[in-house]
Length: 289
Length: 289
Image (cartoon, rainbow over all chains, first blue to last red):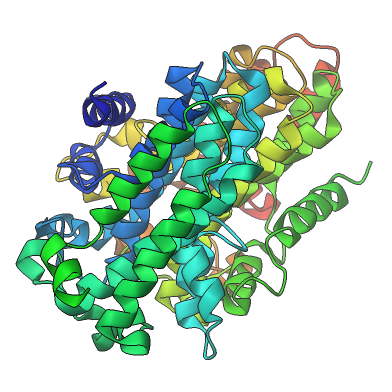
């Protein structure tokens, strides 16, 4: 199955719903700029992979959960890039939303994407009423208070940062939402899937830290050296490059081991392995190993 | 029944959920600053009044819908007050959230309130699975694209404004959500309740325009003369003060007439009448009449 095509189609159709001529054209353009062209779509792919491993039986609901999580991820990028946070000029190789459309439309595009995420799940959840509340709660908690992205980002405003809470909320929460929502959308208990998401979220954070130090901005499509510039914690500064790469390998192994028993466990473990190997360029991983 | 007490208790308990020591304390403070102390709570009171008229049978779900709408209203005020929009220093007689906590926490508090709104409805909706999807959709559409608050606010960024779409989305949508969600939370069809919300939303917008021109900032708890300063449309400028007051009286009458047949129609009409009479100070309404 063409997973990327499935995700792009679902993102497109769920944005189209709000994008008619009745909507202010610049808001439509800003929201589309935030979502397309594609990033790695790592969270929605993870959500679809878990649902498949669980014996997916409600494909429209699973797709809705996957794209809701991607909408929320994009919303967090748009707001994090604002001048009052990272003041980032570039994202995914093109101007950030506030650079392209101005701050007001960047704030509103983020808001609209958050709302669209919940609308998307509710619409697909109508035929699956028993699954809708748990699914919505999984997704809401991953972006709200006290443990979601908004809370994670808010740790940056505190004089004393709870580092583990910061990283778990800012990055890990949406990965755990992806695995748990994948299971819940397929009618399975979500809780056994939390640990897999947590491990992957931490692996992704370490990889992101490595890239911020060791990659080139033109390869990444966004500025590098941001953690040092903004005085944010970074695994390479704490562990060294070799130490950070070793930590990434350990987390990848823990993630593979964290896949619960399910009918598609073998395929899912292979997917996790391949995903974690793509987190940093092969050359970088090998040169340090 | 003490309606205001019921609303404040529900707002408090639904914010408390995310406000433990695990959450960054400044975000907790900013979110509480945005919601308390109370505004007029006109939208949640309307939601409760409609549900009561419909024979409310799921009080926790109705309360959740009412406070979700208030959370979304508060979120829109926090983001609208930001320097890139109205740059308002005061709100409800105290510093706006970004003046009290800085811009980053104002952006995040608004985001967190949007998420909390949907979390609140999903939590209370679990025992009422058939009502959850329609209720969530009513609320999401009133704040998203193409016809919700975010879209309404985005009209201000367009070179050519669709005035009726602007006002309907920016103010009317959340009033229509309040009446429709009140009905849906009580298991009744929401669509017949849209017109009542639309009329009330327009009445509220006209009253707001009148107050912006004719009231004192210290009575209002926020700056006046903002429409002229920000070059926004205002009913007094279009119709004159007497004309705007006449329009307000007409809309109030239309709202009362728009109450659909239901078991509590008489009480609801009285509630609507009393609400619309409170929209502008008696002295102002009489002096012009």
